[in-house]
Image (cartoon, rainbow, N blue to C red; front, top):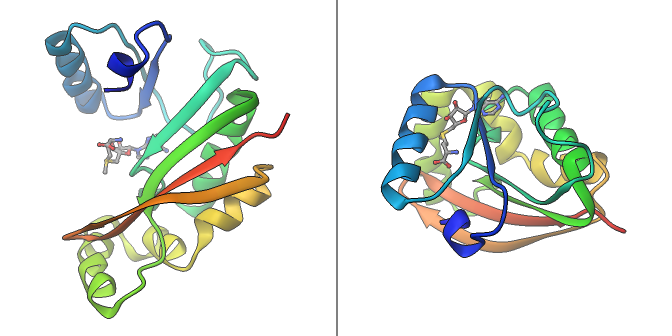
Amino acid sequence: MIKKRASGARLVAVDPDPEVRLIGERKARAAGVEIEYVTAVGDTPLPSVEAASADAVTCSLVLHQCPLEAKQAILENAFRLLKPGGRLVLADYGEQPTPLMRLAFLLVQITDGFEPTEHNRRGAIPRLLQACGFRRTEIVARVPTSTGLISIWRATKEV
Ligand SMILES: C[S@@+](CC[C@H](N)C(=O)[O-])C[C@H]1O[C@@H](n2cnc3c(N)ncnc32)[C@H](O)[C@@H]1O
């Protein structure tokens, strides 16, 4: 979807799971778009992408699976890769505002583990964004799902 919206952009997709890469490559072929896939964790520098060279970084439903140190390292990496003025768009579970959402999110906690998911539920994402250097951060959408509320943050690296 991103590549179709920004067809001239170079798109580099990162995930440590080789199976996920295969799914992504299959989807890109079916959509007729070219994407560079890298099998790696997002918390280490990417040799194929220079620091301060990316217009945008997105991170979708990854952080709730990661220990606190990895969450921080992924966001630091995103900050490092972005040009000044570039933006991070981050989708993940954050605070769960109602008892029903809280209950629904329990399913994710049971599946992905209480330690990493509990940090998200207790508000770690906005704190980590600030700690990594993002000054302007906002929630631009809230998406209720059957597994809890997913928030979409936009964070800008100031010029
Ligand atoms: C719930 S899936 C989301 C997949 C996809 N990003 C999406 O939004 O549909 C979580 C993904 O996070 C990946 N992941 C786990 N730890 C990671 C890390 N340290 N760096 C990058 N990706 C990671 C997993 O391999 C998995 O594909």
